[in-house]
Length: 142
Image 1 (cartoon, rainbow, N blue to C red):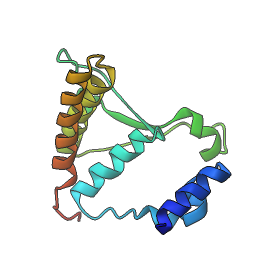
Image 2 (cartoon, rainbow, N blue to C red; image 1 turned 60 degrees about the vertical axis):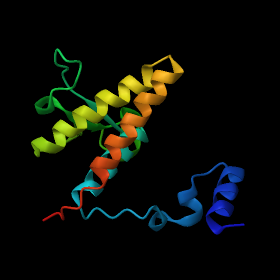
Image 3 (cartoon, one colour; image 1 turned 30 degrees about the vertical axis):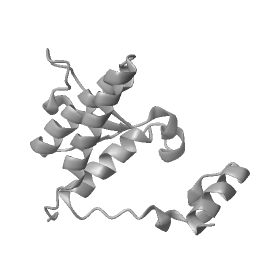
């Protein structure tokens, strides 16, 4: 049995996160390229740890200049011990990243809401292709 599979089964049996078994270092989080930034942000949103919000335009997409990424309110109780602390949003200033997050969010919402299985699969394929395009950007961060 592979060690990672064993850790998954052990974590499931104990009803704990795999991080408890493998440690936080096992996440392999390395944000060194633009693609890593996209993968990191989208992973946080997928995990429901962070929420993506903003104003929607006529095309049904989030307007990039209004996008806010904020900590899930359910987690605030654990992260912000001072109740007077105002929830902070991640401030992304790169317009290209904001535009791509808007497009990703639009495709994600379409795919998750689609009822027709064939159309849902097409949308999921399109979403996966878009994510791969984002994640493969190798421009190094400054």
